[in-house]
Image (cartoon, rainbow, N blue to C red; front, side, top):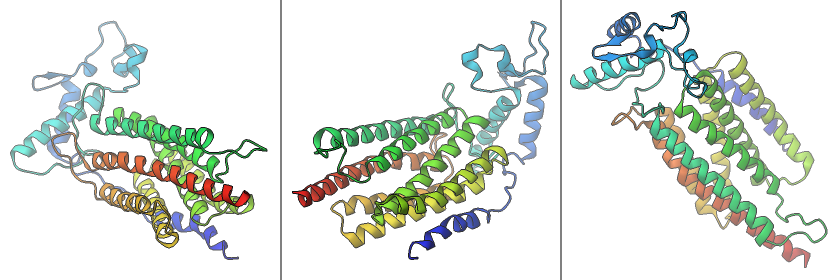
Length: 346
């Protein structure tokens, strides 16, 4: 009976998620000068001294209304840049230069801050930081695996680990690496399908992280209890992912859902660390505080600086350190639990 309140968690998350208001047009793309620039660019295929090759009419007789990337080699088609998107980018940069000269602050265009490209990378700093976090996650998971199977004792009868949460952490590692992989891809090339994969992977990772937090902090080791906790959360997260992919890619709703899940798990870990006085409690508390700060930084949506750094990039930089500390805690927790169990069995 005492565990039944957890069944209300999906309803709580759903209620908070559905409370989001409808997204309004960004200030930048509502600017008449920006609109006129994009319209003129698409008609002429040029912007001042810049020629937009994607708006050029092909000379091989191919219909001009086809996207430019259908004429490019296959390895270039993934960028999905066309006349409209290129004109938007160059007009956005032009308007931001004019606003900077007038002493005005940056504004959003089509829901995103104006960031400079680097070659084929649309958000180079965020893409690089996501890739670095992916490397840290892989290194953390690999060191965790080697610790459990090659340094700590195994059960003599089954050759399995003594640590009761080994499988849960392995799944956590795989979902984490998958999430950061698609984060790097999304920040390299923002298209509809990379955006969906990024949002879906992040939601799956965060939902599973909440499950792991509940199971570990409540010390649930029997399968029945684990299923009771995991089933409703998995059902909610799956429904949310299906909603994003097949009904409406609502960024505001996704942000609210992920924020609630993140804060819930960080609070659980922090409270558990204080109550149980775990040997790694300082790391847990630091990760929890850093995670909550990152969530609020991303929600605050800091405007870009120097053309490359925005609030998301700052959060991604913080995630590198938090990922390292989190896997350090996982290894120390495995060592502690293995030592405690082996002492009892002697």
